[in-house]
Image (cartoon, rainbow, N blue to C red; front, side, top):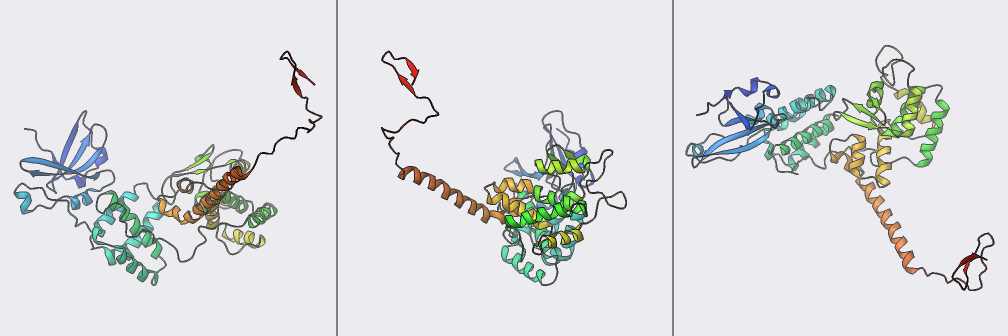
Length: 410
């Protein structure tokens, strides 16, 4: 009989466990009977539960061990009960709490998915605002009414309400991915909106022309700020992504970021953006595209310069981040697919891009109108007969046929 391998799986690095040469290898958790780690020669590492039913072993998959911590996997395994003792398999436990799943979600995100500063902020809002109100609730029991009441109360007390809602929403998507909630049941869906925002609108063409002319006029006085504004308009990148960009991350038509607000992502560079960067590129050495005037780090801010640029261009009170919204809105309103726009902006999920959906609808309506107009004109127009007495154009030779069928010029 094969010896059962039992290990406290919470105390080891699962990623370092050797894979079998062929087939699979099971490692049972010594602290949670019925829970095991399945290693396959293909490279997968998966949490599974084992129970007996009518003398047969029933296996159920819990999730990917690379993203599901051992502590959370233990909470998801079936409870031992009298029915199990009599050989009947029990269903998955639905008792996983927000506190337990949130810990797994934050651990998952902090493994390179988010910037360190983003992870710290999410941990703080979770500790201060999510866990006190919802931490002991089971993940499956939290409904949209609960979230609305919690968020409305939070908005009256703190400016961190939106980040707290975003953190809870991400955790609920994580719960869906691991079978703790039904797919598409995120109770935070459609609630992640600011009270007021310029997202989903774009500046008039005349305003953009004035802004670009102002940048040309002020280029010699504030070159970093002017170049940053141009790149924001041309790429839709975040201000922090460009300020912290280093030359060694630029590879031809792209800038590959190891870290951004939503983890690793690519900024796509069109021809004008590449030309601008080529003009800024130093003749020797590497470093930041926007180096600090003092020290060896990146430039921290251009907010004061942006205020001067905006006022000189006669623009309303806009943030630099609103230029990112303008980039997205122009794309969507001109028929670029929402998923493509989301990829260009580095959005982690489609919910963030759906804010611009009304512009996509408008673009479709305009396109439908143009298509129907072309069809209508084709149906109603009549081909004019050529007049028999019409003279040929003097500058074009006329080809006629002789009686012998030969072709010659008249």
